Length: 502
Image (cartoon, rainbow, N blue to C red; front, side, top):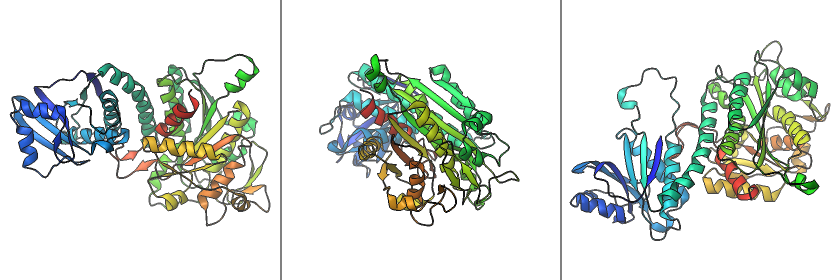
């Protein structure tokens, strides 16, 4: 979608979008459009049930002259108009117009009670519209004409339009990362498997990201027995992809070298999860194409950081495998040796993501010595039992990091909820024949999975985000259509901006 910004104006042609406050109070631009149409806007509002409430809208069709429509968007109360409300408004504009107009002009005014300036408001609405414009329909060969979206261009009119553009241009690069993640998560497993997902990550090299791909022999040499154990049942060989973005100017001396240590993001990339020998039920197994969601987020985040030239040193590491049943597959009861040297009794081959992350986390910690390490994974069904499909679970060995992520999530509406770790849960994964087992029993499944991962991070500040409930949506949201959500890219980008990029 093409998005542009211009100074305030009263358009005389096409589709125009204006805001209406609670109680039917017209904004300055809405009043101007009402005057230009001989009172058509006010008459339409009076004749309808639309009163400017949040999330409500009214289309005034053919209001006069060469205007196609004036679309009134409800803003609610001025004090409630914040960044997230404006992003949702942008999504609502796209939903309302996508089948009816090729282009539209959005008029943005100062609103009493709103803390944002008009140029900031315009940038937020534009971001919401861009995020809502996403679709994944490349495999549909027969589209009915009325199903094809028409909306391709939005122009935002506001004071200080150059400032609005500058703000939006940064968010646009983050949206590119979100879209990349959504694309990767949405692709079927016959298209995205370890080798091809690694190839997708390699496309970031043209943006200045240093990308290295480790193959099976290299991982075997490093002793990644946990990751390789998961992969051994598949005809598709595993990969470990390392992406480095060095955007922070280098300092000098020993203290500077420590300050230049990267932040690391680690993603689970199971491109299809059948469950292995502990095979899943067939119903819903098609959803397991997005069990690489954590890896998708890390790759999308690295794209976003490179796109906006983030002043941060970041490393992204993703372990890519396919978990399949076969004559060579890992069996329940097998014992594997991880890169850390710790041994793992595999009681359930469907608890495979933690095995992949065990080696990926250890490799990242040992090679890059990051000051902070955050992993993302569609790790457990138990997180849906605990939190449903609206929050991700966050586990950490550092309380400050936990709350930083909680606040960042609230700011971008990618919400996370803190869950506990502790020695009581740690005991649940002790094995009688190995250093640990990969499941901890019926209860607290998300916690014992996180407790398992904690054994591979050492003293590094670390957080684990279980995104199993939020990676895919069957209903959609105003800024995220049905399907892959890209949840995590904006969350981590916001955290970096707030806490790391200084």
